[in-house]
Length: 128
Ligand code: AMP
Image (cartoon, rainbow, N blue to C red; front, top):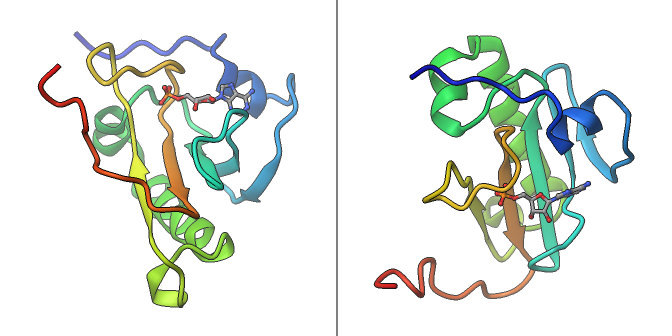
């Protein structure tokens, strides 16, 4: 079944300027902003401006220009927030939840960039 995009999701409203956000970086095809309920000292969400639901939706249907812009913007967020090991930072984790099993709350593709503390094991409850 092809993806269908719900344009009433909260990130679509942020992109339309209907609700505020704490912008970290904006580029032609990408917006990065602070998560409203941070799970770590650094917790930034990176979203494409296009109407994509999940990672695989974006990776298969976005233009090369959108994918390049998004990927470079995510790297720039790592640099700006000081977590990039290549810039002397202590590291980070990138997460992208998709669908019910991925426990995705907002159906607009996004990366979580988390850092600023040791984040623990990736999937502590894998056997649950
Ligand atoms: P996910 O479960 O991967 O879909 O994550 C959605 C994330 O969006 C959660 O970490 C929320 O805290 C975050 N979130 C929800 N509403 C907002 C908002 N208005 N501004 C910033 N972050 C938000």
